[in-house]
Image (tube, rainbow, N blue to C red; front, top):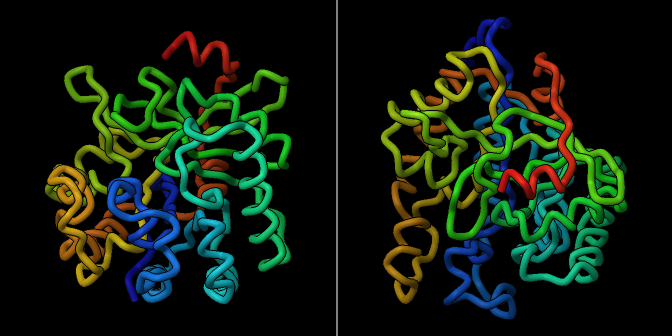
Length: 303
């Protein structure tokens, strides 16, 4: 069993977005939601692979579980909870928030939260949007999260991207005052600064596409050479090189989704040896600098 990291290292957040390969936005052009029940699921075996890895390294993580997965595989949610990990919501249907109406988002968010709470018997306080789709066009969703009883969010990516991101928003954890006056803690996705420019270093496709030494450098850079906790994320399908392939997807979508799937598990093993991780809640508590509070109108001004 690997030794624990020195306790003076920052406690980074390890997060897993629990969805299947067919839920992914990059493949939404060739896989429709009505097809999901007909496709072979691999989310249970892949999530258990991650659970085994975390157990070997004595790491607790936050699992953002998609409501659709919870509904179809309830025992998987219970298994994650019994292993001592934190359960948070990833919404219900993995649709981009800025393409939903507020009422549809409200209904799906309540449905997902209720599913997870019924399965675990515990309150669910954390949320992450599908594809980080809380952007300047969907900040209204934060009021609905607060209305539904969420206390914290990890959906805002301070980068420019074709599907997500609020460039210029804070890189460190902060508090958001919503339009209706509610307060939500925000733990943004990790970005490094290289030559004054933001470079994504949070995990997922960036973790697979960058050579590991480069990713490790960027993650360490973002943490101020080891002084500030950062957010890492991954999906269970990213440790599954044997998953079905959809060659009718665009070249770019296939590049985003399939690159280095065969290397990801080994890289994750190395990451767990190089950095110290725990749940999002534990990492947020370990973040010592005074956190700023921004209103949604201030965030719009940044963007």
